[in-house]
Image (cartoon, rainbow, N blue to C red):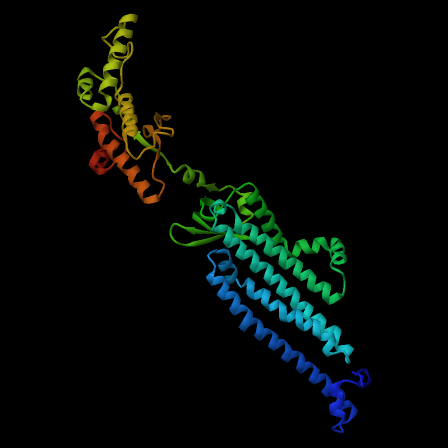
Length: 425
């Protein structure tokens, strides 16, 4: 620096000149003293901010009954505001302290501008996080994608902060910089493609309400089966039921197919859809002896009596030949068992009577005729639900032989299959 650029009236210069020092040394020491004064002023301002202002703010927050300020204190929002004051104060004093060394003013102010941009971006992100916690505490926002929106805010904040730093470094206005970025769009998209894809996916997830924190989802492509624990800008984290954590790209929930079980959780019922495979050889018309035996079963007694009267009247009307059961109409053991299973489900305390309930036959297979149980359990938690399903099918499996029915199972040595093959060999 040119020593002549330092004003002869500068107090430091006058003091050093009185000591009889050389001109170059006086100029260097003057700048050094000015810089030390600035550093001491910044340290003093930061000490006052941390030791006095923050202590007062912390005491005030802890005494209030509201909870929002606790979140702002925890996320260091107030601390960020307090730390802005020393930076602004120092920046304002740079022209005063370096009044007689103007060459130092511009670079120091530019450096402080960098710091201000960073502090403001950090403050905005802290405020966003604190606001998110406040909203999550409120009942009406618990099922809203708050984390998704916060991720968008954080991404935009840091993007603008980076542009702000470039603007300060280059001396180009931010508006001009944004306008000039149009020509570099392809490069920007290439660099930030993951963030941009995640941002767009988050918008779609929030717009169409595809996913929320706490939802139970199944995503076969990624081997995911568990609860959503966070929805971030580029990834969705899921805690699987085996306690492993899976991270899935956010855009996959827009482009691929997955199952969200939220509807089941909202309805507070869980579907049961399972089959009993009946051996076709055991399906037959009900004989009088079988009907007499089945009439002792309370759940089908009234049904059998009503159907017997209806069928007898019909067969008389058409003059059916009773020598063959295929003539006219007759009940089958499978049909009576289907009615029994339906009444059993309707009487079951843990099966919902407000949702669909039926027992139906499906298309016969090589293994037999499937009898599908379709209803909704009142329990949605995994362990209680499986207990209800097991109880239902334990009972129906044990009850089937009373109707003269056999359930299909693969041949085993106990069924004589092995012995038959051995004899043929």
